[in-house]
Amino acid sequence: MRAPGTVMRLDRMGASHQTRLSFMRQLTRRMQAEGWTTERTAWAVDGAGVGHAVYVVRTPRRAYSLVAFAHDLPPASRSDRVIAEAWDATFALVDGVATARDVARLSGDVPKQEAGRVTARELCLSRANRSARLWDHVVGRLAAGAQPDADRLAEVGYLMRTTAVYGSGKFGAADRAAYDDRPEMAAPFQAEMLTVWLIRTFVRDLVEHMARARSPGAVPLDPDLARGLGIGNSTGLGMAPFLMNHPRLIHRWIAARETALARVRAVERATPEARDVFAARLASARRNAEGWRVADPVLAAAVAGLRADLAAAAGWGTDGPFPWAALLERAGALGLEAQEALAALVLEPYGDLVDDLGPGMADVAAPARLDGTMTVAAMRAAVEAVHGAALRADWSDPAETARLWYVSAEKAEPRLAERADEPLEAWEQPLGPQRDAAALRAALDGFADCAPVAEVALARPDLRAALLRAQVAAAHAYAEIRDNTLAGGMRPIDLLRAKLSFFGATRFDPRSDRWLRICLYAGAPYPDEIAAGDADAWVYP
Image 1 (cartoon, rainbow, N blue to C red):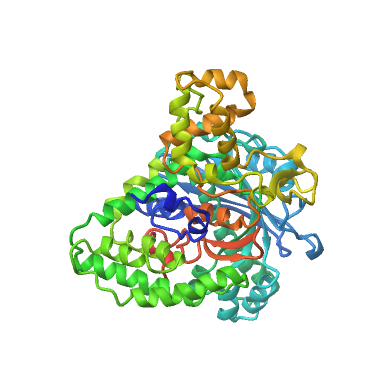
Image 2 (cartoon, one colour; image 1 turned 90 degrees about the vertical axis):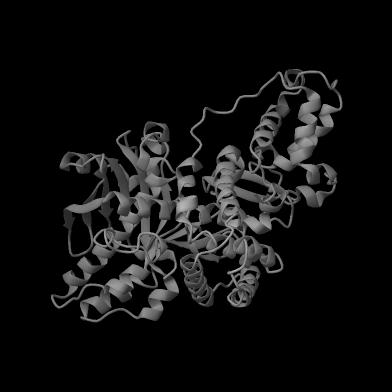
């Protein structure tokens, strides 16, 4: 397995790509393998696009329902901000079959989102806005009996984009612990991924409905065009702290991927079938890279390098001994984008070797507790093993702590400030593990090697969190980011992309170094296609 000091660097994490272990692909594979069915049980939407709909998904064991509310939102009120108060559509994922009584109950709160409350019967709460660039175009063309412009669809990639998909106990919804023992929910974020998949179906139905309301001669959206559309998402700094706040969970994600890579590198000979699958996926990845257009200059340069690197890799042979180990070793001379793209691609032929790792990516253990019996000597060694670079840094240099994280009262989400410009230390969030580890290591010199760390915690309660993090990191190799998250040159979007790649996101489009747009489920089968369609490699059209 690759060393944590290699894998957990921000620049490499910011070059992450989806893999067959990504949460969306795990879900669609299960849907097909278990014969899930989806039925639209209610549609009460008027010609202006206002009303509600219900979609019921039935698995072999139970059912889940998406209750969708469509709204007539003036364009001036449309905002992707967390603090928005109105959206084009709002949603709840209900545990079980939603009834008319459930719809009536939810209609008073789901449209309010954070200002409302749901119950433990709801697993997720979400909302979405129409694409200003595409919605009216698609409705107009379908109403005129024609298909929308394929190039415009490809440029945007979605008809609606979500601005949040809340779960895990938010606003009264069920805690994850209430359902994490269900096989279909074992992998991380499966309720959220199911919600987005159903939202995508509702969006297709709504745009066709509004076209028919405008003209009796309207036509449905071409299935190939519809399949190419996903659900957009705008993600900003609010997501970035997740990777620092959940070190044990992040270890499980990274460790699963790295274990999968180790298994594939150990394959002594590639069968002709495996070589064909890899070649096909590589060709598709090259096409995706050719169509990947971004304005961000840093990513634009990386994508240009990716195109050239994948073209070079297409000429490499895979018929020698340990072909995938050799290919990945050779890829070390390429850019990080290509290294991580190829690391994802070599997994593609080997579902039988790696797919079993997916359900184990969740963290269902009890919360970590500080082991006060650990000796100071052992703690010192643990800190030095994980944070060697941080201990060598000059923390008196203002550049090392140029940024600070805080939560904006106005925007209700995490933000980054320039420490020298804004006096916000009183509100600083504990999101500098490297700095805290350096402070802990310095403090340990004041205690005897044989002393238990309980003495340190009693004498320095301000270091208790750092002590616990060090113990977690000692037991979980991929728990900690190995870069300074307070440095002036840190790019927060590296954190965002690392997390979103595990969801299975594509079309990363940074709008600054602090927020980006993505696409979810582009290419995936719809409910009427899941039984016979491509439930796995749809991300490689």
